Length: 177
Image (cartoon, rainbow, N blue to C red):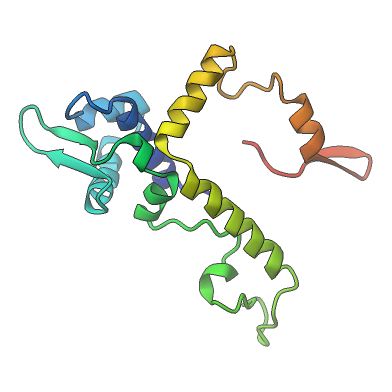
């Protein structure tokens, strides 16, 4: 699954609003500055989030945006769906229900379709079960334990499980970005 800039910015904005939950309306400019999101792009994103019911807004002095529900009731999947993003790792899962490969004229069923379907289903499970409260709690645990975002410390065990030896070199199975 590749998340577009639009999806990533939407997640960042909602996460920021989750952090500010209960503090009233948060101005568009504050979100843009804090999250380093271009103002015009953020405005489009927040409008889509508002139209999907994730955010509420008010215009004028003292206006801004806030989460329409507590962070524990807003999932990552809901935000990505409001941006019309797919959890599919390949396009053929989005094109038809039969998982046909459109790369040849006969449109034979792809031998890998079950793998792609399983990846999509597991990804959806994670996205649907992860709330913005979960994200806040995970960050708080990481902060208490001294872990920093992007840190590779403490990942040796994880790395040994998810790396695979290929032709004498070790390459990660999943790009951890």
